[in-house]
Image: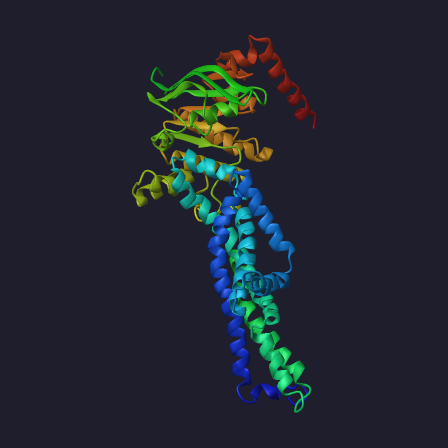
Length: 225
Length: 253
């Protein structure tokens, strides 16, 4: 225990603080995902529209968000909005904005992909059976789209949870930041603690993400069509 | 035989400048089996797709039992219930089991009694030899099995007329037969059918009338024995010769 530096976790409220940090990371991910999914669905449907201008704008948005490292986006939203417009955003708010922008972009591309992957004949054989347009969407297209989408969007959630580790750079005290604080505070008494604490952080991320990614795998297998 | 089910009057269909069907008229009578043949791109699939308004037409009219079929009309789903269509790529719904594929339209469109439709579906599956597949999913079936189930799915809607759009074209040769046999038995039952196919031997066996389509026109219309033994037009002769050539290749393998 001493050698790994795990003892510092049991000092004071350290473990609780780490869990609190994890909760901050999860909270930001969950809120961002909750915003991304509906917006992504709407944008994704618009990306399959016939209007070239709409498609062009959305394409540029998607590429811009993808090319830009998330860290740069965080800095832009957190610092530059203050400099340019004088906004005083809290770190957590800025994080949610950035992650929601990113998630929406990724989600819209997933939705677009799922929609165009449904063959035209699925629509046609539905209407040939006498189903109305609404019924074709309700019973044939949407169930298939959702089946393709759910595993992919679950993977997006785990990517988002992992990427929240960046937000310590704009001063949000999430699990990694708490870990650094604990290590700093105990530098003199247990100089080895870095290993044990980071190992714990690793395990915490793992515990948060693993069940989610297992669920995605399970659904993918179950719905593999 | 004199009860006219489907009437096609002077229809014209084009995609942009490309005219697919040009002033085409055709009547189909109850219990009749019509086979439509012709070179690829002659408009035969388009003709079937126009009949149930998957494609709109620019001119002319199509009537099913006196009611006009129009692409954007309100009662189109109602009319489509009476037209069973089977496609080349089977198009079962992959997220539904075989039984649910069959039940979907009778239950949701016709709002029929579930146990009654299930009983009917089971009887039909029994007849095509797939009674044990009702809980399977399409991905677990062979192409021929999927196509036979697609036929059952269309039959369960009690259509007045059945359209078959090159239903064996995507199948491996050894599965073609099982599908054609199902269609032969439907013809024997007196179903009204319009069949687009490249299986000339089958066409000969099943058809009451053969229609030879080329360049969007009906070039020749005859009883199968006449058409295949003794085609009247040069184009039909050329077309049938292509198959003679194919036949030589097949037997030399």
